[in-house]
Image (tube, rainbow, N blue to C red; front, side):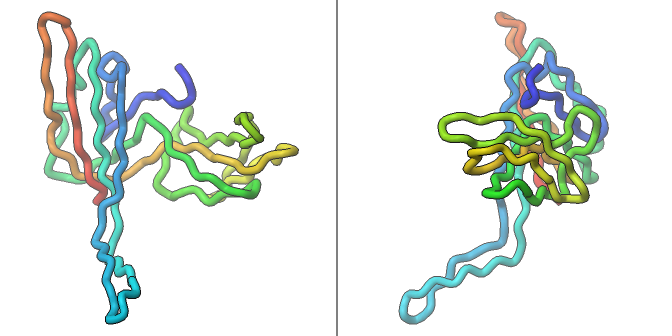
Length: 174
């Protein structure tokens, strides 16, 4: 399995890879924001709050098996697909809401003209220190998000002809 394709976990249940062979993860910002205009048309952005909505969908040889979860309380969602932070320097600030379990440690890549190259990084608190690469024009640190969410039970379908289960799960950050 590649660094980018891992299992995800919800409410302490690890979803079997056979239930998520083609996992797709969409993370969308949601929030109480409005773009307001002053008398002369100048814009002012007003922000009251920001959170994220995560939509997970996949298909596989078996259903995800999430029926035992309690859907009326917050749960921990440990995402199985990464996000990244780009920095012009060999240091980057990572979000506090990220996975820290074994196998999900952040990793770094240096962007050179026309290619990406893996480079070591270390993390202390929320700061990633990246080993500099000569000629790099930017760096990316990849991490797996972890959020406290509310979720509704997934929409599930099963196709007998293809023996394939499909499902979609929507979670919103608490």
